[in-house]
Amino acid sequence: MAVGHYTLDFKLRAPADHTATLRGLQSIFQEQEMTETVHDTEGHGYLATFIGKNGRFAILRMHSHGLVTFDLQCCEGDDVTQVDNLLNSLEKKLKALLHGNVERVKRLPALHRGAKVDRYWPTADGRLVEYDIDEVVYETDSAYQNIKILHSQQFGNILILNGDVNLAESDLPYTRAIMGSGRECYAGKEVLILGGGDGGILCEAVKLKPKMITMVEIDQLVIDGCRKHMRKTCGNVLDNLKGDCYEVLVEDCVPVLKKFVEDGRTFDYVINDLTAVPISTAPEEESTWEFLRLILDLSIKVLRPSGKYFTQGNCVNLTEALGEYEELLGKLSCKVDFSKEVVCVPSYMELWVFYAVWKK
Image (cartoon, rainbow, N blue to C red; front, side, top):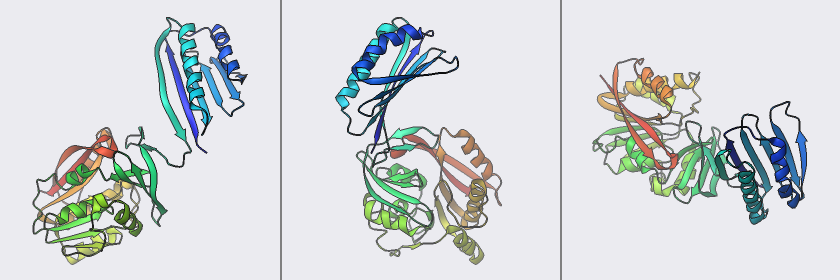
């Protein structure tokens, strides 16, 4: 059963008189038949908890530095009107009691914890986003990761791997950016895609009449889920692992790349769409940065002299991580140049950086 968590905050210009304020609030809690328990904060303001017969649980805290916080937890199915009335009464009463001392009042929509459908997912820089998700359409655990496909009313189905939002059916801007934003000619070219199990890049690349696309995706269950539930992204390209101009290898990309290097096989374009957190089984994977360097080095080695390597970077707010990645580009086995582009990816709800890399 889900729990609704409501919050109400008052930022004060100066600390309030705890005794007088609480005396003025007593009638509200009495009307709600909530039992009060006062806790010792050892001089750090006032703290009380309230328990109601209907299972409601509230925490009222008046901080010594001049902040009043009220948290209310209600079980799923609780009378929303009664909850609103309680919060409205409390807000109105506190405004009257603290008249002239209130700098700001902030009341947030309820946070629903433990619901059957999880609507809360973090951005890359750690901010919490509430999506309009209303259905779990696919969920399974593979040998490599937890795989979810959730339905959003505005973004369509969203692929989430190990808690990380990967791609939604709305996210064609992501796919276009990681392919060069329409500035490249793929006709008659050989293309290598690393990852990309959602089929989005493969679907768009096939339309551009390449000579051959080789896609290396480690997780068959990602392919299976997206084939059925991400049709607006992948079209029909995942229906078969081989097509007229493409082949999908369900393998770890590291040994495949090493074999390509050994055999002298090269490509006009290498597109790295691996997950942000590596799931490679390669023994070289000592850290994320070492893994990224390994993939970069191997990719550049299979890139033709006039070819380009495309990859996603990170959100624009993670400047330190982006800086480290750009430093890494200067430590490869051969010298490279790069450019970057910032694109708004709809379901990410943030600006995202994409890189193009080529040999000097």
